[in-house]
Image 1 (cartoon, protein in one colour):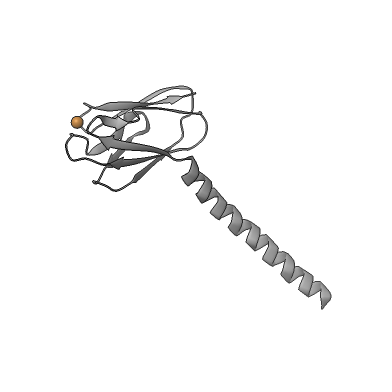
Image 2 (cartoon, rainbow, N blue to C red):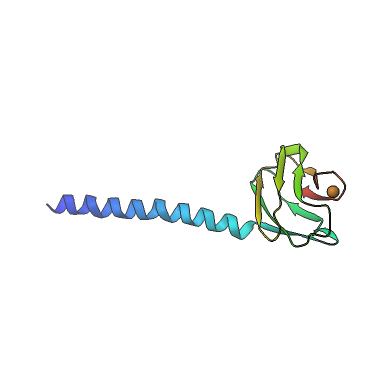
Length: 117
Ligand SMILES: [Cu+2]
């Protein structure tokens, strides 16, 4: 009887730990996310730095209708995402090696870069 109770408690503890990990993971990703705004000056900031070998999440929010930036395109990672006005768009990728990753609007006119350390 006592053993069964112990096993039940152990199961609850393990479940709680697994759950905690999942929640913690989601939270830390949001915390590490890099916010980029699309303003009349383009992408702001137009240059961000990230370490290589780890997933990177950019949260791009278009705040103006006055530029041609309606999409986020990063060719090196095959990313093309629409940027609805006022809606944060999460873009996640993992840069494998140090270098520079260029991204731009859908017409490749206005650009920014991710410097990978
Ligand atoms: Cu453009």
